[in-house]
Image (cartoon, rainbow, N blue to C red; front, side, top):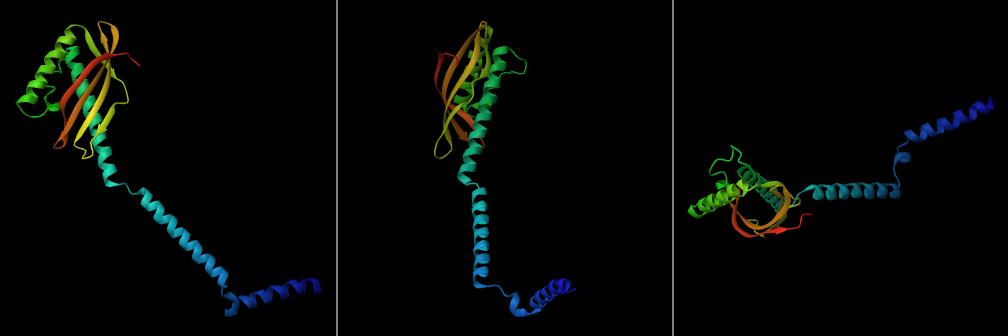
Length: 187
């Protein structure tokens, strides 16, 4: 019976100590440890929040670059439709990709005529070689672009490298200049 009484006394003593207010206070070391843990948790939360915030300039750059890539792919698809004699390729299909002035309309018409002739001579655009090389200016309103298109010239593979300048007008990109177009080795 004495063996059963000893654990009961220890349990009663511990219970009484839990009720006494002085026994529940934390030591200075325990308090400091909790303060450090709370500060560390707050610092981690602040770091995570700042890391998740995107720099507005970076966001604008990504949006402009993505929209330019999309515009170029649509432009090249329109050129391909012209070359293939697709009925969707109505006159003026390239006008949205040039400045909205007399010179832009003339350049679009001239390029359509050139691409129709190339198409009738057996040239076709097969695909664009990815990735496109884009260098967007600091003000994010102009870009230098290098595009390589894989084409077929009368059934034989050919790659053509273009260097172009594109300019942001309002909410869209337009081609301001075609600097270079030359045949290159296909990758």
